[in-house]
Length: 264
Length: 287
Ligand SMILES: Nc1ncnc2c1ncn2[C@@H]1O[C@H](COP(=O)(O)OP(=O)(O)OP(=O)(O)O)[C@@H](O)[C@H]1O
Ligand SMILES: [Mg+2]
Image 1 (cartoon, each protein chain N blue to C red):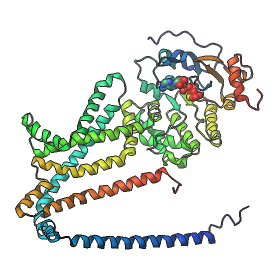
Image 2 (cartoon, protein in one colour):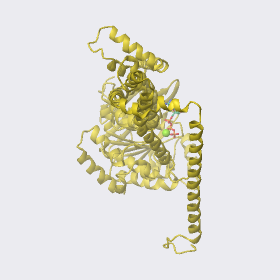
Image 3 (tube, rainbow over the protein chains, first blue to last red):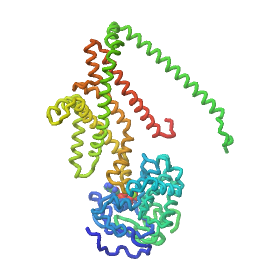
Image 4 (cartoon, chains in turn purple, green):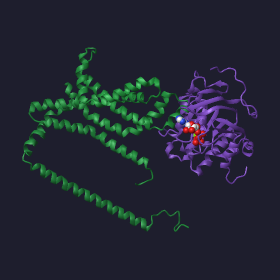
């Protein structure tokens, strides 16, 4: 597999900056079940991309492949032009360049919130503890969790835990932040506080790829919405366009289920 | 609308009444348990003292003079047990962890390691400790491969071999009880496989199985006495020697008591810790 010479990928994406992440022809099967059947995706700097699709459409699998937590069967993944799907790259270094937040069980329950947040800085980037803690405290302060810094994660509410997890993911200034349904395990009244934080990060120019079932939020915050269906990107486009005028029948059917009382 | 001023936190009449009732109940239970304990002790005492052979048993098992005379030797022996225990604990922790980690490795490359660890634990969990002691304690020095042929050394090794098998099983259960997402979360931060194990998985695993590990420690604490079969002059062996000299079994009772005293803090600690864990798991609930 060679990292050189890549033709340009998806066309028609509004210029946002350089491509931070590019996925080309990504394939992944579990056993004999194909889950991703040739995914092409480009994410530019400062862009917020929402991944939507039915349950089981492969959103989580795609994010796990991008973060090299899952082996891939074919295709290539580039992070700022580096082919990170090359088996010769140091996967740990690559992962340190991305921030990831999962649905739940993100925080390590046996260490304090502050230690959770500084762990990657201290152990992977070898930042001195005092320096890492200063950064972490400033971030926690910003999201209103400064007083929880010395607590253990199980003393925090679900929403606070997810916010702390997001803080942990951005503490090392990742090139891209990957969020996998970070609010779906939360009680409805806690969802807003977590989404507000994502909104803020997006406004600051953080590059974000988020798998989500929060269609309203995707419409508000995402620059582009990517609809995953049967292992391929069936349709994508600016959030407003895609929600208002889905081209594909299956996209329409999927969106109809979320529409509820709102008209598009 | 609240029936009272929300800022008035003084207990209501109903609550005061409830508290008084609970206090009376507590006093009553304490009294009942006290009386029943005393009655029970007195009954047992008379039952034992009035057995026909009581005097003879008291003379040959509970002779204070013999106890005092054998004290120095037995205590010296106990010191040997403590030394063996200290070394064995460290050895068991290391080997037990290693075995547990070997058994949780995934992927075909590690099959031999996994199989080795599995075979090892099966073997040493099945073998009686005393047989391991005989085989290692008399067999290995017989090879004349090693300069050190001290019975204490090989006894310690035998203990480590056997207890590592138990402890690794406990550890493995703990490792498998750590949610897989924790591993993913750690790796996604850029931690290596080894760092993930060391910083994230093992500490959580140990916490989950600490009560079980402490129980194994208590068991090992008394099983160190078995090294006496190799001729090591530990507390048990010393008691045996004293018993032979005095034609009196009191030294055994003394050694037994000392072992119990040695184990007691750990037993209490285990109970306390288990209770605390249970408490933490049901915060805010009384059932
Ligand atoms: N480790 C695994 N082993 C086998 N099959 C898996 C594994 N992980 C995921 N799958 C399968 O892959 C498919 C895609 O799963 P994935 O979790 O990526 O879906 P998703 O789009 O994230 O769904 P959801 O919206 O419910 O989170 C599913 O059919 C799932 O059963
Ligand atoms: Mg998912």
